[in-house]
Image 1 (cartoon, rainbow, N blue to C red):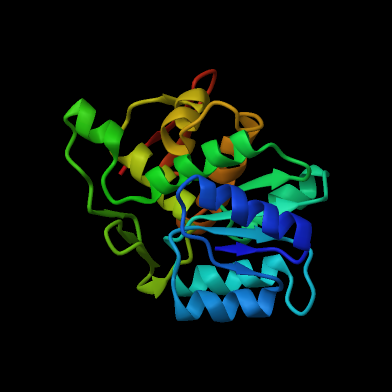
Image 2: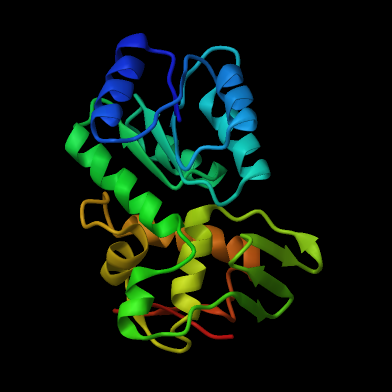
Length: 230
């Protein structure tokens, strides 16, 4: 699903995605996009930030509340880091700053779709047991249904946060580098910087740790990356 108010961008995306074999639903504003999403849930949403009637951040919040497992790619004309981080904090899984190249867009779409599936290709290759549920501290995660609870209250996690937690928890007490997380969780090497991983880890800690600045489960391994302790 493409939700974009600029006609030339919207039509260009629809035409190029259709040529790649995707079935595309396109909408010209946020409110229309949310209505279309409710009527026919897509596999992935490409969402512009600045739109009339309902902006992309508000649409993203609504989608996250309805279907937390759906990957969201945000498009923005803004180039400051704070704008990008805000989009990710709202629940987007990735973003692209306009103008962008179609090859990069396609690569990111494929990575998001692959990572949103229930079965991890890397886990199968490594012969690892697929984790379906996880409990630690006062948190319970159901990876099959993409549901999370803390103190028996629903906890809002983005699809990428689910995948990041799943990857770390499948390797308990094993340090994982930032580059490894970019490769295995994001699925490509062209993501802006390893700082992206740090931002996601910080948000995940804020949601699942009892005391985020003194984490007990998602730990920093200095000079390496991160590891998970049940």
